[in-house]
Length: 111
Image (cartoon, rainbow, N blue to C red; front, side, top):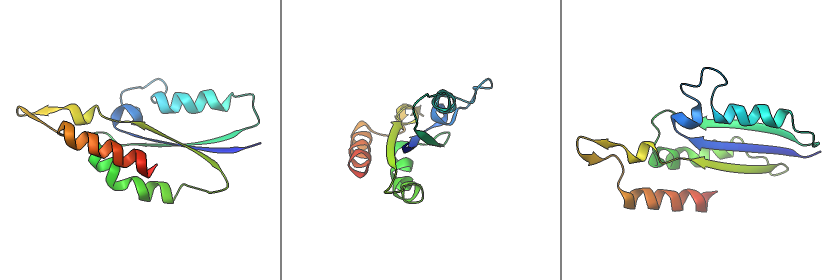
């Protein structure tokens, strides 16, 4: 039996906003893994926050991981990010492509 932690970072889509039936895709993943016939034990952390952009996720990433990471467990990190970054507010990109690219690289390297 293996303990597997899954940390999922993202925005409202990750959080599960508007899915009144099953609470979003992260919760649906949890439900599917609970029915997994392997001897693995999964703990899924839904770290999605509505409206979060890559900059916000980058700023909280280390702290979120430190309190959930156990060196004796297997850990999977999933990034489901970018939708909020692409918003256009008052004819301006919420996050520039260059900033988005740099944030993604930083997050991948941190993971």
